[in-house]
Image 1 (tube, rainbow, N blue to C red):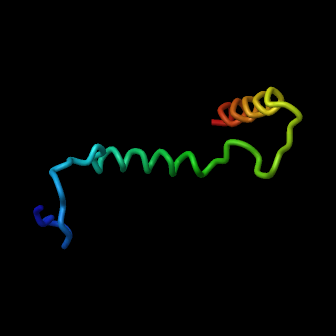
Image 2: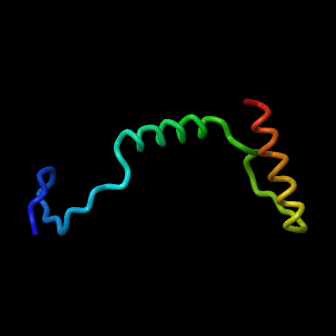
Image 3: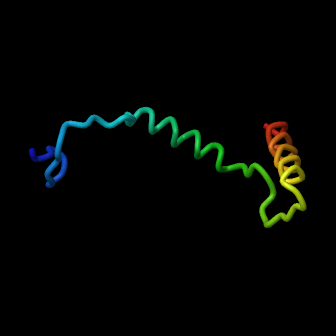
Length: 68
């Protein structure tokens, strides 16, 4: 075991993080930009069938995409 340079804890192994901070920054900015506009209306919606629910979901996604 070795001591980590950044924290006062022991680290087992030399595993390198899979995601760099630059990649994380891009992801965070993307999520922030997308979260400002909701994809569909808020609330609870009930459907009789999965097909009806999927059709409604696709309609909401298409409507949100056309607004951009």
